Length: 85
View 1 (cartoon, one colour):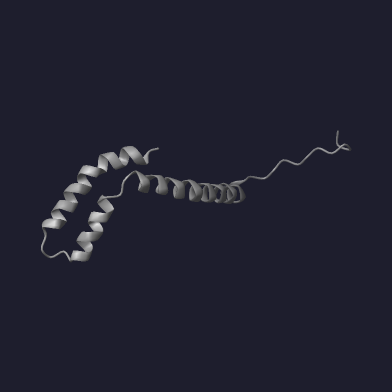
View 2 (cartoon, rainbow, N blue to C red):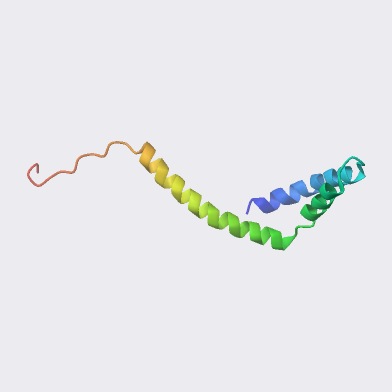
């Protein structure tokens, strides 16, 4: 959700950088072509990246939660047994 406004904000700066690199004679043609392909990424690329982020986000957030629980959990209070009550 946050990536879309960031992409809209960054698009003019990326286009300006691409124009600057296109006008530079020292840039190899392969690099210029790669820049053109990155700039041409549209809604399909956004949906694919969302899918990857969704899957990997679920995996790593779960692992982070489990790891955080193991590292930062405090001592648990002892359970009261029937003999103590």
